[in-house]
Length: 74
Image (cartoon, rainbow, N blue to C red):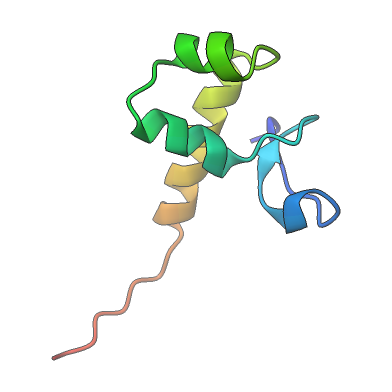
């Protein structure tokens, strides 16, 4: 998780790839559009590495895994 940082001074504290202003959300949205890691790097963020994109996925997984879901009966 050292590749992801949260700084209240950058993008209102949204998680970003460390050392950049690229949000985890931006990367996840591109992945959702079925772009490959290589396409994201080549066409959008040439300063990123594959490990940065993997870190975004790992961050999202960790976030969902830590959620405490409480179902409310209908």
